Length: 208
Image (cartoon, rainbow, N blue to C red; front, side, top):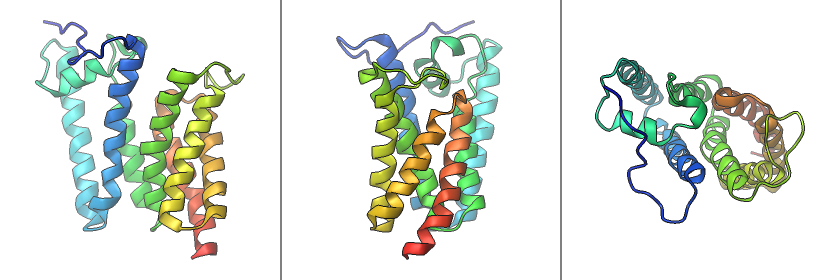
């Protein structure tokens, strides 16, 4: 048994590629809730993320064996790119791992900035790039100038909201933009929060 590619609620006049990216990045944006949950208890938040990864891994394994899991499998299909079809979709796993590493490796406020870079920086980079990307950057695997600019603006806004200072926010956003340029495919869900969090952990204390 297989599931046909189903977008759920089609968006009139919107190309399928953009709809796919919209669904993918809507899931991405949910990871922005992690700092809020971690403010109550980091251990429990890590447990929730780990459980989510395990549940998704099991659901995705069942889907590939022809036994789709209600809601999870349909969301997976709706947010799958052409290269993902017929394969294990690893994006949600690296998304969860990236958020977990941010919490494990860095203290506040670097941890929150790292997660926000993952949620907003990567999310807006892809959406802006798909919608307005015309100029591609050589050696980046198809990344666009507008997409990288979207990452910079999103991470700058998030960093400024957390730190309240423009200078460290610019430094952190610039680092995130260059990390986003790397042709890392789904591994950007790990590289972006880890790299951005590292820079934030160095810069943020200087302005606190």
